[in-house]
Length: 169
Image (cartoon, rainbow, N blue to C red; front, side):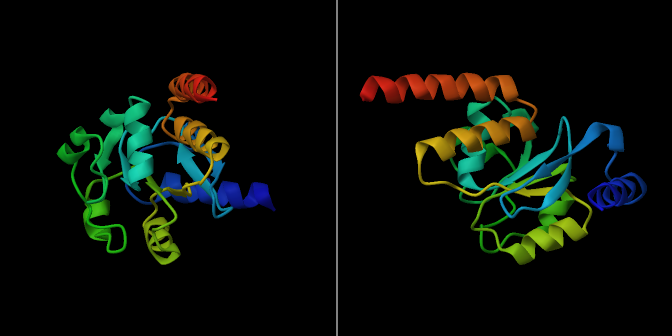
């Protein structure tokens, strides 16, 4: 059944919407809502609806992929040069879609209703919940590294952060 669902999703992406990725350039990613989302292997146009995700994308040197952010994604200062899609609780979905993202990354503060609306527009949207401990932060960095095709940078960042934490202990 899972294979059939993945094939149906892949067909939907290859036949409809404005997504130019073929199903060969996509893979299934399980997000923090336990949803299976078909995402591009190397996204070129990412919208971040979470300050934490935006900061991680900058730390991974993936800011060139960012085409949209929320009003609250204001760090680092360079993030302010990226188009805003409104606040976290009042995202302008039309504005978001007008940016033609091939991937939308949201945190836990974005409502499930908004996630569903974006999904119905045939845009991959992945929920990466903010975590409250170091191990989970490292996991989020790795997951965002995978999603942004910056795995090597994510591993280096985690190693650097682990060294800093060890030096404090």
